[in-house]
Length: 409
Image (cartoon, rainbow, N blue to C red):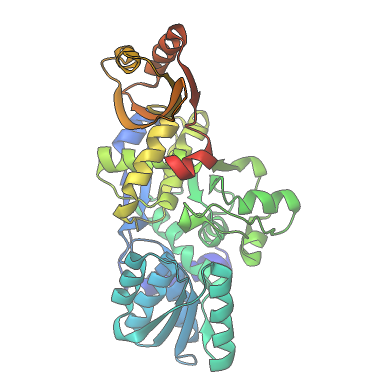
């Protein structure tokens, strides 16, 4: 057994005085679908609904009582993990969060930390928040808690692997891991080594690991898409990358943000499981490795479930557009009696108008219509568009035009 494995096991044992192991659950729905033995490591069921408190706990226990004031910069799961541990250890925590952080996350952080923490809202963007946190540490002599680029944090996150091995009573054949800053993946890979196969999953809008492997060193991939906020990191941690440097670039995949939304809605509707976007990454990646995992034991790490339900309409919208059951068009409507009725007659029995805005300008023979249509099957749009063409209606499909979508969808 390596020194790292011994330390990871010791960290895991120490955690049992604070919180229990998160469940490792076999998922029959996914197992049947992919013809494999698929298990979900439910980090969304930790006390703070993510794995982040593991690293926070391990990093803090190593320096207490020498340090009694802890600082972090985070807009989400790391902040909540640190707050929870500050309350547990009875130490002071100062948590810097961007001004733009949703109130739900701020409130949860305060609930977890109680009287032991102070939340400071600084900066519109994370780099300003981080700079303010680090400056405070210098002035006050406080201990900065990195969300991922720290050996003690990596060691703490490796407790996920320790629990998987204990709960499964063996090492799985394949593990699928979401990647942001690299703390979780570095910990799991350092613990299991080459005893299993891996798939690392990143959002399209923040491919920090893939870019680092291509460059041979951590590289800033800004600007990033922050939708998958739990994995939206512009630059993988230096310590994390050193532990991941030897992985095969072909084992790293990226997924579109819209595609991830399909899994979020499916897991909610079919399984009753609430996942944040980063927590759904590993599950959505199954379809990318379906041939490779068939007949094997696979563990998907569901990294978190801190989902703000105010985002549900956006998630549903993205999922429908990606799966092809919802489209938006700019339709050129002739200015003649019966034109609208003719158009409505083209709609099929399963087609539903979900958006209709009509703009008629004077002295024009045509008017513009923004129209959104939902249907049950993507194939329904083929006959619909063919009838539009046959009837002479001019239209433009703007479903995947991100610039227009920001303004009109």
